[in-house]
Length: 163
Length: 446
Image (cartoon, rainbow over all chains, first blue to last red; front, side):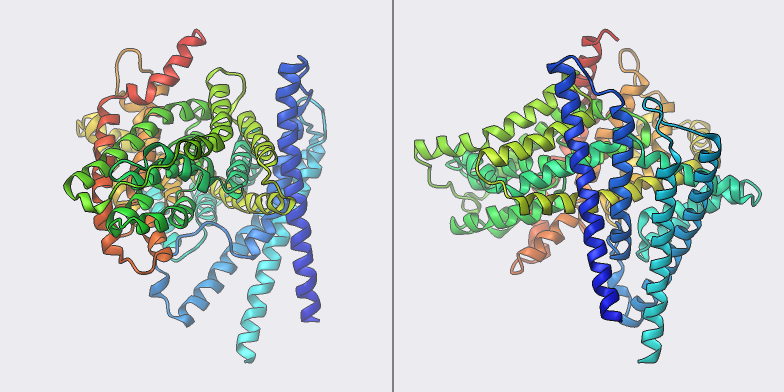
């Protein structure tokens, strides 16, 4: 079971990174097309900004859970040598829990924002695309990342205690 | 002010025990806001949620992943070797020529790769073997790589300048233009530092074997496409043909075209570059979100205003304040890596710089902020090679295991002095940074 979960997690991470990379590639092509359209054909792409905003957010949040769960956020490891193995273990656990509480809290508030944006019918400026689906997506990603991080921290703790 | 200072101490404490800096700034910022609003959760967490959405949906910030992608693509196309060969063709036959080639190649490579640590790691593999073959002293060979790696964080496109622009609301294009001349000055002074070392000790860096003419021509021709791409990006921004984020898109696309044209394109390379780019970008965006939330707290808590009152109350001169800030950066630089240091300090220092009125006449407050951005980045560069924690020195030490950290730091001293000279020039001659941005403003009739 644990093996299967690990395999599924790795595949899911690969898919998320691939989709995130695809959004970035499309964003690059869109930007180049805008410049060429503007100067080559005197025809800028209408609503490019709206689409660019969505692509940027998708690209960041599709990769966000992978970076967070792999512990690849920017940090300072200056005092690492001060911690013993045991000390590092407890420190990492506390950091994981703190991060997961922050993410779960923010995920919940983002969900509330999405509800508000949906009820007010807020749309993008040029293409009038509804904004709430993206915010629900961001809320889902942030919340899920927090829950998975907490789950992993607890399972590590349980495993260590049973050993 | 007390709340903001306590928040600062807590963030620094959290960062030192390895809490990711974006998470530390974000969580302390949000909770501090809740405290300031009498425990109303919605008043603290609502703005934090807004920060997450504002930052990640700010299309001008697409400049970050697109420039990182450009750098990754160019780095993968084996450009580090080409740049080194081209620089060698130009100056390799001079005394200390291999170290000078290293400085030039480091400047070029770190400008496009955007990471001084990656440059130090890559260039040590490219340049050190040939310097050792020619009998260069370890002090000069390792120090030229460690110091050369710092050049790129100022030469545009620079991720640190983008982040400074975001934190202070300044134009990224203007900051890029302001970085060009100080960047070139940095390269020139480093070359002078090499010349000084070989003048004092000629055997520290003997001249290399001259390349034959056709080989030299070939080597220089190989880097022409990258120089053209660089010229298109900077020329495009200067001529207001496109914005910084459009320049980044064109740059990344151009890097793909170049790698296809020189026969070094591979799908696996593209996928690897994209995957590295999105992961690096997530780290930077989390940092920016954390900084945005924390900024709201310190502004709300009135720290910038209180600091201004403190400075004016004590009758400090603007340049005294600047000197104190530089000292703080040099001390912090011994502990924090560049991005963390800048996201933590700029929101506090920048409003003070804006209010103090450094210049009279043509230099507006906006231009003073751009000048300050360049000063901050140069000080950050200095901190990367300052003992005892200069990060570039340690990166190099991890690659070159048979040279002691002390040897590298000893070798770095002339480069460090060159950096201090550059800092003094930039402070006393703001025109060095502001000539190009002010040129474009007068060109646009503002």
